[in-house]
Length: 353
Image 1 (tube, rainbow, N blue to C red):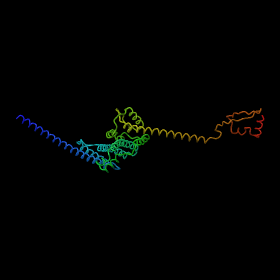
Image 2 (cartoon, rainbow, N blue to C red; image 1 turned 135 degrees about the vertical axis):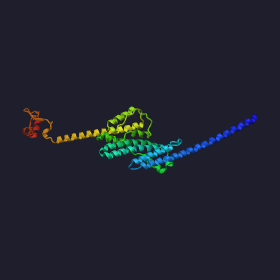
Image 3 (cartoon, helix red, strand yellow; image 1 turned 180 degrees about the vertical axis):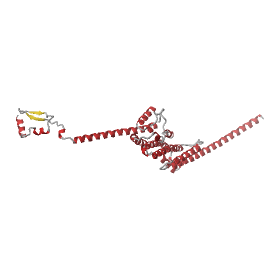
Image 4 (cartoon, rainbow, N blue to C red; image 1 turned 45 degrees about the vertical axis):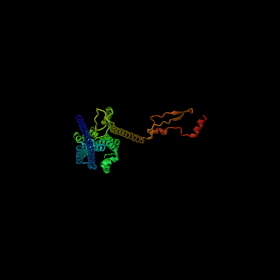
């Protein structure tokens, strides 16, 4: 009886083990299918967001409605993908960050356009504010583009399609050299002489877009001294209007941020140096012109002549004669230079002595 009980127990144990193994196998199959479904859904949402980015931003004139549509599609993407935990975001991540960057900068760019329409006399104020927004957008997009370019092109074509992948690549690529852009805005800042009121300045974008865009850029880990960065900020702020000023950092900054601030600083300092050289050159040319004009107005009597005058004394010696400072042109007419006799005879007499 006891042996039978043991045998039955063993059989039940084996059956239970087989049942657990079968259950685990089915769970694994279910998980595998779920991962595939998640990946498929995620790719679909990524493609929709990429198409929205192209449809709403690939235009000559960006409207607030375009920005609102893009923001709505961004929200839809976030809601539809937040539960997808086992997916590859190597393509969706740079596309999402590009869309966020464009939506942030787009609103502030439109603000500057309204400012321009309202205050056409403040053209340089508009250009500087607008240019600073673009500068930070390009800065962010350059890092996003580098990340997107690293993804295998065949994989991008598979997820997005060849045409959409090409459009996205063109959208986030910028051929503007960030240092050249900083140089041009630096020249404009040095020449800036407009006087907008406090009320007018309030209608320009708040510079918080700088920090917002930084969140979506692929910057290096902070490792640069805040002192080094803050010195660049000081140099820049000294030479630019207040509405462009940067805040000092209380912590380490990334090498990318430090390089960006260095480009901005070099842009205005270089423009200031060039301006001073041009002013010096203009002053020098003016001085030379004045000197030449004065010289051309002088008569022969106004020039000093260092050539000495000689006179023969009673003993036949030739001595240098000092010219009387009060001698007039009439005195010169009666003055005997010793040339009234034959010059060859004089030379012969001197030689015989």
